[in-house]
Image: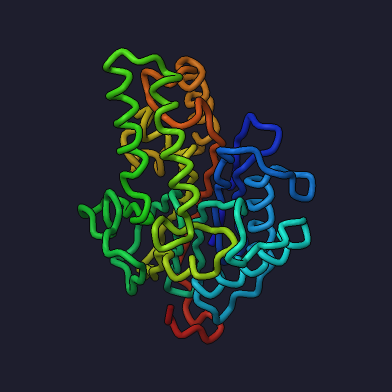
Length: 314
């Protein structure tokens, strides 16, 4: 695996995204921006803290012979331990509240397979792959474009827990704006709904996400995709995905992959920042947050035969 781009852009004092890569893997981690004030952890806001720690862990973990789901469990256990050391004494227990959370998408090459693991709303785009060899998740949906899309089109993989959730909520905002409500009112009506969604995360009543609940790993979407020749992968945060929706600055994830492949990631983010700044009240293009951290990783791959005895199992 050869990484061509691994970059994150942010206007914040502390970027809440992290992205990275190693010889056999790559990831994007998108810390969930706080809806209520929370303590600093090791001098950092919670979303930045959790994404930085998770990225550092993935950079160094020995994951040979492990399924990515098991790697995710061990990552969560690491976050629990670090959280307790940082003052979150109830981390990982039923008394825990307010532990920072993050979306994570992770890929790893094992010879002629690419393992993919998604937990949250960071899409993974694949080009040049065969249909997935194995798929395990809590839902059967393959996301907006599905892994078996039209011939020649990239596969767009998402976590089905999050498909259409934000679109539906922002539809309510659009309806409110269309009725003549001012932006503060339109978005304010959803504040309690967003808080409720956040409080129910990592429970059976809500969606699962990277945090301090090891059981969340069982709800990740994990699959293995065969490499039949040269291929490429793109992982991005939802902030980078704004180029596709809601702004439509590129025509779908296939076009986004092509643009990043040709070195246009920085230019695309400049265009994104310009259109975000032109709509600060979020009226023309409803969205949560006038601007968001934007992260992308792009890598090219070729099959590796006999990769140290790997048996190709998930």
